[in-house]
Length: 506
Image (cartoon, rainbow, N blue to C red; front, side, top):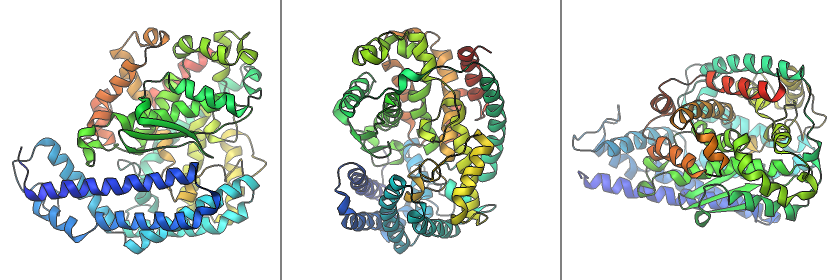
């Protein structure tokens, strides 16, 4: 294989950066799981130091010099003809990443990391105590830093474009707005039909179950998924998340709601979907773009695939409902499978995004997208955020949260500085449904196989069609390669209409 010394050096540098990032991820994981609450100050300093080290390596003179030997810096195209296809992909993505990271000063990265590390702890306290004023000063700082970041990166139409690019490079604010406009129309119409139908009784899902039982249940159901237990682990946190240090080291968390045991299971299915994506990336190419996720939208498509398309499907529960009944006989022994399936798919507008049903979920995301745009543009001030949140909840979902804890304080994302992240949750649903439509055509007997407890073939299809490519293709290219069509809301809306018209009999 053609591999100049400069390429070998750049490859080693890339692996070194990934190792630093793994350590950084481990610090964040520990902060959210086992770190003593009083240790936030030294942890913030540790995270700030590691973040600055990562940034220094990503933007070092050595990094730039190596790239300049290998690619034309203006276009990013290789200077030599002997590179393989995979090497060309790596060079293209390394060049793209360098140009983006090089624009941010190391001092900015360190300051941003330290403030967000502290802010995430303040957010946790503010949420528990329903005290928005406690978090507001930190949110103001983060928004100002996000505006500064957008200005440094540059944009054409809207500062939000620059932030959105970090999570979904194929999208612009205008394009997301157009997609969401069509999606909103379809969801509102479907929700109207459901509201006019007889509501489903899911009271048996709301009985209290102690934490010890729920933790055991979570581990039991994680073991039923096609995820390698040697390379993963499950813990508790305030907000469920997944983080991967390597394809052979993936951490997921869940949270326990005393009167919502299915929330625990769906969180595990969701985060396991993220983990299976990371574990499906090519280990041999770890440390390069060939072993990195395409985007957060594609990442979210994998988590929603396992949480909803599989985890809320009737075939899945044909296989595993008996074991759930055995674990929770008091709650479920007398509940037939069909009634259970309808109950876990009950549609009802609610306050919390992560607890939302499939039909209303994307409306929660659209709300956040609209608010984020206004905060970044300056048309909405932090002081007015709680009222703006309540107004949009009423407009989109017809419900108004009574507290900020179930309103604008419910998500951790803003405390982490993740402006531009939220749209990927809805886009992930769209990608997922479009991928699934193709999967179902390739495997017309998928429901029968899943009903028999066979899930490995599902994971293997995803690994072959999506995971194995790393960043070879961008999101737009990948969805067209897999499905033959550009991304649209059509497959998702079609899936929802078919499923919920059957469940609600309209």
